[in-house]
Image (cartoon, rainbow, N blue to C red):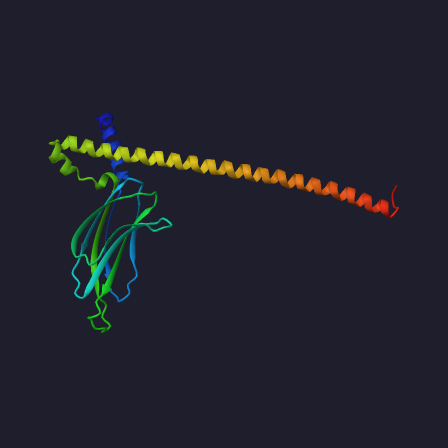
Length: 219
């Protein structure tokens, strides 16, 4: 019994370790010039990202959403203004950067400045990779059984883990190549420094010898 349960435990552990789901609920204050509140998640190139935002009511407030990455150019994947209720967005990551879901809650100019703090509740779910795939829809479309659906989900999770390991391997190889290149440059610079010091020393010897000869200090 213990031998049969071990593979199931390993599969369950694999599933738990590979989850890429973020669920967060927060209050977003409104103002005339609101700062962006961003929630960041790591995503690999080609990864499917499903963003589900459930925005609570807020009179005289306009909530905008923008999805960007952490690259130097701050690529914008999505930009929507005045979202209300439950909204679902799907994007595909294009770079090996973190994906940021940013919100701004604007206070309408018609709302009097009475000192009251106004805010809206945002319930955010971010699914990345295998967790973003709707396996129920796939099961209905392909007439899969519950076991086949779970196997398909495990297949997606395993593929995601394999892709992650291949990415880590490629990154390690890049780091190793960079280290080797740096070591070669340092070594070449060290040899150049030694050669320069030797050449400078020889030049000083001949210069001093010629100086002493002109002064008749040596033959």
